[in-house]
Image 1 (cartoon, rainbow, N blue to C red):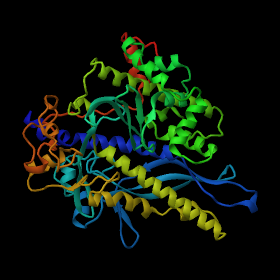
Image 2 (tube, rainbow, N blue to C red):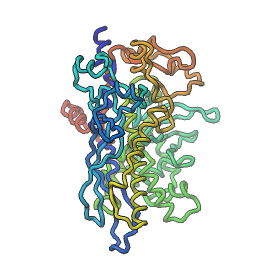
Image 3 (tube, one colour):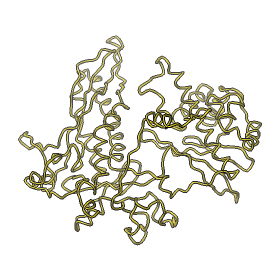
Image 4 (spheres, rainbow, N blue to C red):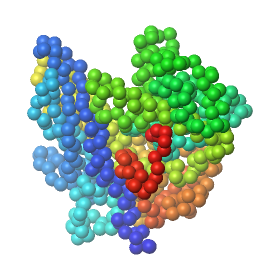
Length: 513
């Protein structure tokens, strides 16, 4: 066991595997999400042709260093430490300028430098044996799993947070009354929205989610999403007789009878005193983007309003959101009827870990959006000055590089988190191993959080029961157990569903998402 613990493959495998997955799949996935860069170039004198840039295949090279005389050579971690360089590799991307639907020749250009994790697939040390590592000034037992930024070794902390896209129930106190709540942290493409369904003192369900001030009535929101008849709404929640009693009260208090009335009900809440057309557009935009955004994966990437089948797909997604809200309402009523207990937020099945690859994906998504806006600005400026439009001159690699390196150097991550990147503790070998396997919680250090700091039985075999600092960080800063193995979630559920059905699991009669 001790040999497995001290082996370089085991200590930082979670970070290296996560970063390799980021290099292999998630980088291209983020590019595919962006797909194209629209511009507002005025080409009325040239037939009013729209101009945009299409993003193609992305490739990450190995780390190189460019000297003052223009020559370049492979960069190794030891040289990066000695010369105070950043251990990063060029990112090459296919960009195609399109004028009026006619694409020009694709241009492969360097869009920036990506910080490379030592020991990952893109590292120049990857695949070397001990003698080759020694020849390049490296410790053959060094486990890797960290970055080198401006000559300093930086390690990304593993972040522990509540599981996203999972319905959880709890009690909350309001005006000295107990409120039953079902909530879900809906996450999609880096955006995280808290959606809450709660039962008030009159047994009426209310829904709240981002960009909506106050609460929306559950039944009226369900009608706005496409479920019109009372029977459809009840079936989306439950056929349990006890729950039907609650649902009858909700149906009697509803204000809307049609989908159009439901959409206008939401629009009046979002944009009071505005025109009906604006209220309708605002309501549809908010329902499609801010309510349960994780179900937007059902929409094909890049589909536009004018595309064939767009309206049908929108209806499918809204119906999926209505059925998910129905499941949340059912969980809320089950809690009221004591058929379900509140969810333990400290149970490790309700936790998820963000490793280095996940954190770099969030950072790259924001950085690529910033680069896209800069390319759009450069092309529009060149057009206004009557210059030839060129991808090569429009791409400024420093924009992406700075956005990627600065958070790693400072620890200030996207989303307002601090302390995500830390200076690697090289006091001794054990301190380094401990630092590479650290897990931090987002909870405030100044609050008691007694239950969150306690040992939980489900941490057995996952989290070390003894290694935690004293003082305000006690129980909130933890470390992995010796032989922990961090598994990775899957985005495509179809293969898993197929295996379950093959094993004899029966599909539910009502639609579930």
